[in-house]
Length: 269
Image (cartoon, rainbow, N blue to C red; front, side, top):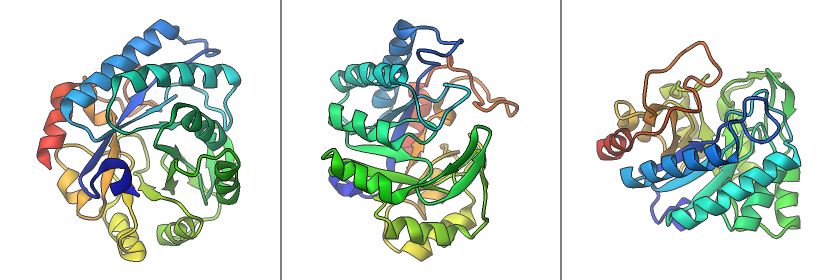
C-alpha cells in the first residue's frame, strides 16, 4: 500500500500541517489565518523534500470524538487549497477520532489516506473514553465508495491511557487482522519518540506489514527508528522555536514549520 501511494516502501516522510483552532473555537484566528498558515507550512514541507502531507485540526482544544459540521466545512475548504498546491500524496486526520468525517473529506477531495487514532483499542483521554470500531471504519469506507483511501491506524496512541492494558503486539495483530493499511506507533506525548524496543517488537510481530512512527522523529533519531519502520508522520520537530513540556501541544499554532529543519531531516536519511 505504501509503495502504491508514495512510490517507495521505506524512508517515507509525511509532513503534518497542524491547523489553528477552527470555526466555533473561542481562540480561532479565522479562516484567512488558518489557510495562510497551512499554505506556508505545506510549502516549507514540500521545499524540504517530504514524500507526503497530512493536515489535521490539531489545535481544536478541547477535542471532541466527533467534530461539528463547521469544522468539517473548514477542513474541506483548506483541503481544496492544499490540493492546488501539492503534487505529493495528501491525507487528513480529524481529531479526536472522527474517521467518518475523515473518510468523507478524503472521498470528496480525492485524498490518498486518513489517520485513525483509535482503531482497535479502548482508551481514556482528557476528552473521555474512546473505543475504536475497526469494523465500522471498514464498513463505512465501503459504504461511501472510498475503498481506495488507505487507513493509517494508531496502536496505543499518545495522549491516552489504555482501559484494558495489553502488550502493543496484541493491538498490532488485531489491527492487521481488521484490515489496517499501515500501523502507527507513537511515544506517550507530542514530541516523544516511540520506544525502540516496542517498535522492534511490533516489527517482529507483523513482519513486512507497513509501520509508521507517529511522534518524536527528528534528524537525530530517524535512522535508528527507521530500522524498524517504513516511515514517519512528522511536524513538531520541524517547527521553529523550542518546545514546552507543559502543554498538550508543545508549540503554539503561530509557530511555523521550517524548510531548513525539514531538509535536514530528509537529508539525515
